[in-house]
Length: 235
Image (cartoon, rainbow, N blue to C red; front, side):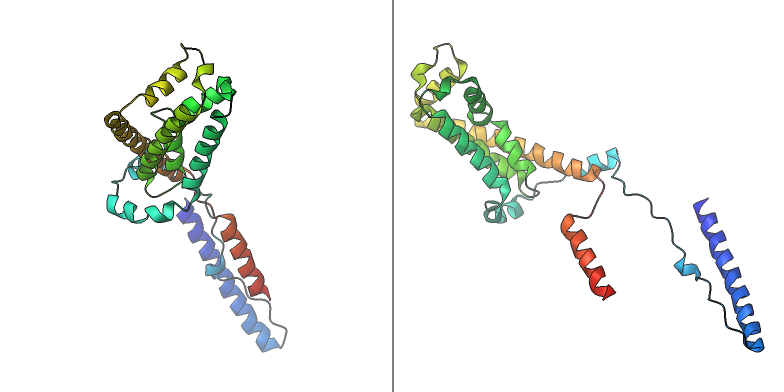
């Protein structure tokens, strides 16, 4: 139906052009002013459909990609200068600083922060780091899995755990971290690194899926650049 309506519009424009050309010839012969020319068929505006996202099945297929490990390792130095690294790192440091303050470890909101951000396996930081980057999400997840574990070791060593009850699960976990030998710590680092990489990879897949399902729209910078170009052209 849309193709037929467009063809009818073009035919109507051509008919008007023929009539206008005939009128111009007659007006030229009679010495009267020429009428304005009708718009050409190419100038007929075609309605633009509204932007739409990719279908669910296509988005699912497109979001699964293999991890380019070598390419991701090459971009690691640049990733360490982005918000994907600084925001989770800042969150980790804030939780550590608050948790080691005298007496604050007894507060429920501090314990919630320690449990969610630091205690292994800490999926929150790994997922956050993976969501904030489009490259190397698994790598950022593994990195913050290790950083969160080191943060829990810092809290276990610097915080006063004696103010917590003996039955407190967070106190038990933190106290257990301080009594481990080197082999146990290495095993824990390996575990949290793998768990963080999986969480980061899941975050990267989820981010690709959301971007595929979201309609593509121009960013504010692109809109400002387009408007500036139009203003320069108008001058």
